[in-house]
Length: 116
Image (cartoon, rainbow, N blue to C red):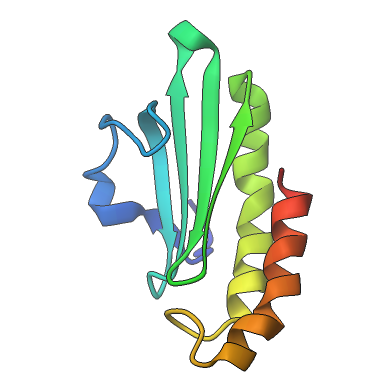
């Protein structure tokens, strides 16, 4: 990688090859600098199963499913800037008040709708 995008292997790659939260094998797992953002790609070619779970610590854990590796790989890259943008609008670690959570609702919903 020639340019520092802020994304790197999550946990120094220790999660790769293990079972993911959606029941596939983790083939790609990246976190964004600061540790609040994460994208995990799981696959199981025997089932034509591919999933990407996007996460923002304290706010969001959203799985998305695909039937082929090419679509999943493209989506993984497309989701990075959107996840960064969303994460920048949220308080670190989760809502700090009821009002904070209510204000975030439409932002989180828009992300989930866009990436469903």
